[in-house]
Length: 236
Ligand SMILES: *Cc1c(COP(=O)(O)O)cnc(C)c1O
Image (cartoon, rainbow, N blue to C red; front, side):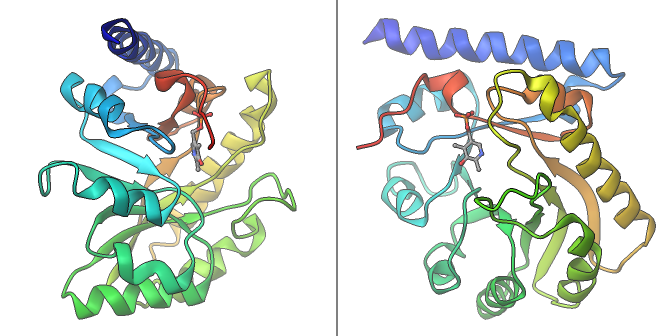
């Protein structure tokens, strides 16, 4: 067991080095890139190892997993990010528990997040998920509709649009995804130029275990890494 714990710390050391190298390569600073460990299917004991390492933000793709894990950590000690598809009828369960929702992909969902946030007197930070690779299997707004979508939801007062997120295709050679990351960055820059009220466009959540270095070179500000930290997931 201590060997496994040690392994998590070693993996984090290595990832941090690679993040720094990728940042420097593209003239960026390490501190401009946020490492978000993805803890789906990972038990709290192993999450605790990452917490002890000094990281207190975690990404989950399911509402139920956030609810299961939420009470295992002291209140407010952890910032939970919802990175997976969110059903409108489940917003109410997590609205008071999440720091950032990466996966806004419909007006209905944005309206529900807004409504539930208003009831709690809070403003919720969100990203708009873009289906940059236009895969049928993927959630997200089409790139060509993203600006119009953002203009619409920007009128909602209890959400704050921080930027864009995408899930690139799974590829062995990360270079194959470079153009997608570049396109997402360009989309974010173009939308930022519109100076839309309530739209910040300072966050680009892109890059996972297989391609985060390329994503950083292309402007990622959040990389979401699971396997690279914890090893292969065991889906029960
Ligand atoms: C699982 C998941 C990740 C992490 O994937 P790895 O390849 O294990 O790093 C990132 N983003 C989302 C949305 C995920 O569901």
